[in-house]
Length: 269
Image 1 (cartoon, helix red, strand yellow):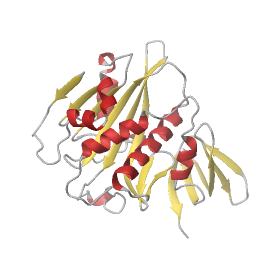
Image 2: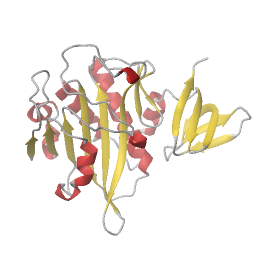
Image 3: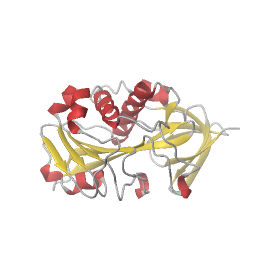
């Protein structure tokens, strides 16, 4: 089932086209795909229109632009028109899956898709949800949930935001953010197709993707600073546990298991 919902001006450079996504990934025809020229946030739309989505098959929301995109801790995610990928997967679920694993699995799918498209092996992950290129952030993942009136989680909402070939960033992001490529013409449809293909190959029953996550995770083996509420931990990131938690050993060799919070600094000395 295909939907086209347009707001604002039409884009003429590198348009996103649902039919082309399906050409690159024919199995996408089994999904419910919706395209927005401009939207406040694909995750916000997903949560506010949950009753519209199928309980039998996944829905994918794709936007050319977000006017109020956000990531973890409700931080703004810069989402200009024509140069990024902003999509949300809405997944009806039957089995209970540890929330953090949705983020880790999606991260693996994103990195595999981007490495395949660009042939750039320097695209990595920072625990838990950042996509990195040469130590700069080029994207992020946000997993949220939708519950019924009884409080039971019925759907998972996974947002992915990627700077594909954004050339100009706001001043506050210029030393932090980076684009995947400097190419002026990029077929975002192919990247979206690769991402969907990689995502739907993930096995959340066995979590076999965790080995790939460890391989792609640039945080492991580094001295880091983790902020979790009022707690601050500095130490070496050692491993990713089966539930997605990060193991950190501080300078006194104390073992810390981090299942929330943020890696706020990576030391390179």
